[in-house]
Amino acid sequence: MKDLLKFGFWILFFFAIVSCENTKRKKETISNQTEKTKINVGVFNGNGASPVCILETMEALKVDTGIAPVEVSAFDIMNGKLNDLDALVFPGGSGSKEFNNMGQLAAEKIKEFGQKKGKGLVGICAGGYLLSTTPTYPSLEILGAPDTRDYYDRGRGLISFHLNNKGKEIFYELKNTDSLFIQYYDGPMFEDPGKYGLNVLGNIYSDIATHKGYPHGFTPGKPAFFTKEYGQGKVFVSVGHPEATAGMRWIVPRMARWVTGNELISYSNDLIRPEINNKEILFYKDTKKKESTLFWQLFDKDPSVVTNAVDSLHALRSRPSIRWSIGLLRHKDPKIRLKAADYIVESEYTAAIPDLQAAVDVEKDSEVKQKLDKKLGKLKGFVGKQQL
Image: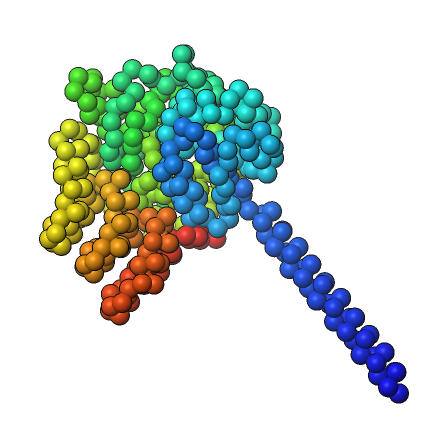
């Protein structure tokens, strides 16, 4: 009888082990299937790509839980990483330096990735320069269209643009908004887009010429966004920086979805906020001087001076000041810590989640801790906000 009981025990034990292994394999299979259904988007991180632009592009892609973003280097491309991707994004920085870093062999692989394998290519600011075909400028020569090299460093700021009917089909949430605004930093200007087969989605309103002696009247009417078919693949270019514009960061995953032929799903209302930017702000010499003065005020011993400086920088839509505010989360004054948290949340700067989490963890004042934690929850809420 004891032998029979022992035998029965081992039989049950065996089936229990097999059942656990089957359950484990089933979970792993489901997990693998889930990953395979995601849109795999690479962000080029080679020399020439701005570290800030890489970071902000990666964060913008995280808005969409259907997208799996990953940084991709030139040696990754040479080692076959493109085989795992559906699209590749070239962020801001320097287009010629990005091309220099990838080298001719990786450049050929990228062109094959789009033209022959039917994958997507996205260029943001410097990425547009990189995709252009401009005499004397080292580039991928994918667009066929040259950018205008004269006075290319026209300046930075929050510029205005409007979408045409084609643009409103892709960015359908903006169809009832005429004047739109986006961060800009010396992005490429393309003349005669129709001549080169560029499908313009929207045009620039702003007259961007912030340096003394630079001619005015050139940028109004130039493409702000455009697409182009590239062999079997698709190309999407933004001359500005949606990834750095609060209320407009969702445009980046939308571009990735379009070039990969995936459904253009919408995102929640707390991400689609074109109304929060309602005027052009170009950084002329006096604006830059004001920005610099406000930076130094962040070190003032008077807390009211610091908080006023943060508010003024926000009003200027100063791009670097968002990153300056991260250090203020570690300020001794609780009001300044809260003000910094407010600014970071209003700017959707999700890259600061670890910093804000640390601020919550070490906060000793229970009331301040509760307020910081609430802001942390809102900042975390900006990640993965699509509406299926």
